[in-house]
Length: 319
Image (cartoon, rainbow, N blue to C red; front, side, top):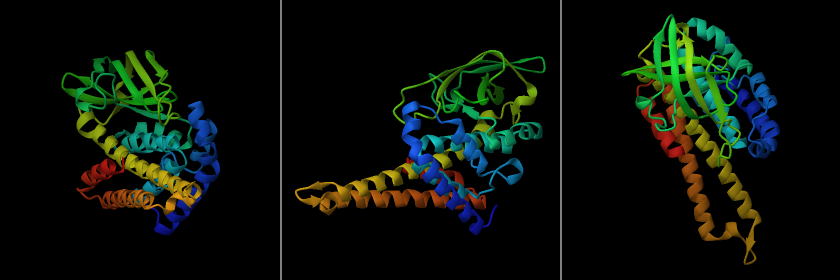
């Protein structure tokens, strides 16, 4: 992990980047429902795409607390852009880093960090949602690999991903497979017109008898639900908790700014007691959400057994 002063320097640089490069274009991203490649490339140049991973894999080596601070700064400027960090780093990068073979880590992590490759985490299904224990996408052994059949839906960045980490089922056994977009039988369909995070390239993915080599198993066969997905969702929840803080903080700042500009009955509305109460409540809840996230981050840094529960609490409250 980097020392605090160095991480603080990185945070200040990311704050400037978010305010100068992302914030002015966030409305355009939302209206066009596209996160442009030039923004992804600029994020990659700053090693944001795998910010929490070690430098040897192209990351920044940030500790969990500073990874959270960085997520907040990006999320305040554009929640879709922060969503890319959640998917690329927390769901995909951290999962490959912990459970991927050396071959898979060497093949995919640096391209992920450089923005040459986009990954997606394919868990949710049309009739199952994110119930990992009930997935209906199935895999069967064939030769030196497996054949995959099924559908995934609401997959963030699935529209542009170069590969997917797919949770599939074989009887009671659950396994995560790395499936490349170019494999025969893979089809993606973008989902447009969402109410929020419209530049997150959400998609539905179909797998029609897709052959996946055995070297693309993440972890070991049968550990997909108990180990691999647990790791991914834990990291994802932590990132999403900070994204909640980001949206709350941005909304709070917009509320306060508007209350100082808007006049009613010859008074700025920030002078009315009811509005002051609303702002006070928002300040308190946002501060509390951030404090819960920081506590979860410190416990994660310490490797505490309480970190998972504290992360759940932080995500619940912040979202």
